[in-house]
Length: 212
Image (cartoon, rainbow, N blue to C red; front, side):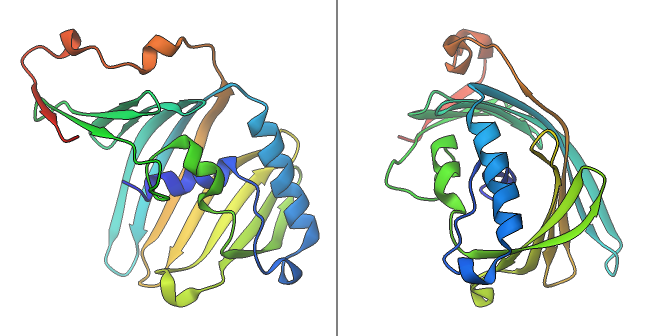
């Protein structure tokens, strides 16, 4: 599940790589513009599609999902589960199993599934280079600095420089398995804080498992 948030980390952060001298300054400027534009939105709603493919193994799978973020709160629906978080607690709802798992967000866990951590998850560890451009669409390649610590060769971002949004992200795996996220909707939204609180009455008959 943590890998799902790679996508949103790359949507929402500025890319301040340690090896900035090796990175294209124009690419950095574009990524900083994306970060600034996104940070100006109080609430973000994303509709996306995830595709996993490996031509050698004849694998092609896809699944759609949604994510709504407000400050440290979020709603996620993806691959048969829903998550509700008020910034301190996460309720993971498994509809098919009629089960709800409750867990706390650990503020000391740098890899915790929290929108606040998205703002720092990928601040370092990449160099970035400009790729091809067509109209307002610019490709930027993120190249991992420590290749021994990751299982992919690069991450390719497709950015609409006019609206300052990431439209597509593709991660190229070392084993020939590629992961791709396509954004269908990336928009502001008006939503009340109450939407990020779990209501047990809505899940009558579900097993409630408290993992805190």
